[in-house]
Image 1 (spheres, helix red, strand yellow):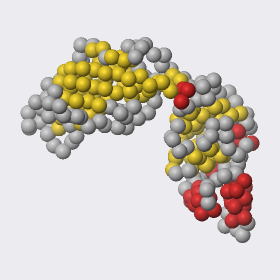
Image 2 (cartoon, one colour; image 1 turned 90 degrees about the horizontal axis):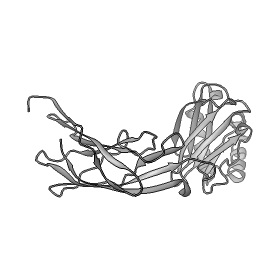
Image 3 (cartoon, rainbow, N blue to C red; image 1 turned 45 degrees about the horizontal axis):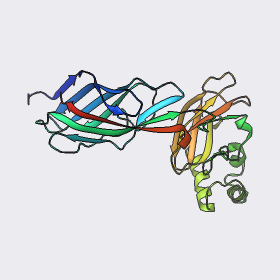
Image 4 (cartoon, rainbow, N blue to C red; image 1 turned 180 degrees about the vertical axis):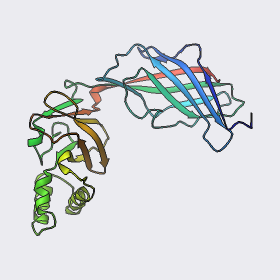
Length: 278
């Protein structure tokens, strides 16, 4: 066995149901990967949800607060990020990953966590649709959801004065009237970075100033007048949120923002016991 570079174990378990409030939640598969070299030994537990409505407006994720204890009493280290969670999805199967236990471990005695169910709707303020947003630059598009700020920058207006004697008076006005940056220094850094990191065709991107202290903005999408998504990519660094577009925006385009409001989130605790190792 030690002469093999990578040993991968795969087992389709007999379906095991867990304890969860009002939700059918079960383990359908346990995978284990062990390396003889320097690779990370991993175990992934695939769980399936049968009784929740899941689609583009109903998403689910397993929160980071996962506890797994093996039959020796050792707590397993939880992996975060793709494909092991940390993001909402509409797929009914979710993968929960851990650093693999010692080879003599025969089962995971306890697996506890919280399933988070996210309903996206205007009624719950978790879906904000903004028509004609392209004509509403330099104003907070999320003023109805304080303390959130999402301000579409009038790129051409600032570009005209950038590097001239009118630049600092203009960004001072914007800082005071619009609320971009808490200080003049922050405002200057924001605009300087925006121009430094601009792409070759600024007409194909939207630049926003964003304040999201609790990280509750889940997604921002641009649609054309026919409802077709026009966002090709995005980046988020500090207070700058940039959306790349496939075409130059038109007045009939709309912006759709998904926000993880308290009313839109439901937490469902779950627990499994005596999960056999492969």
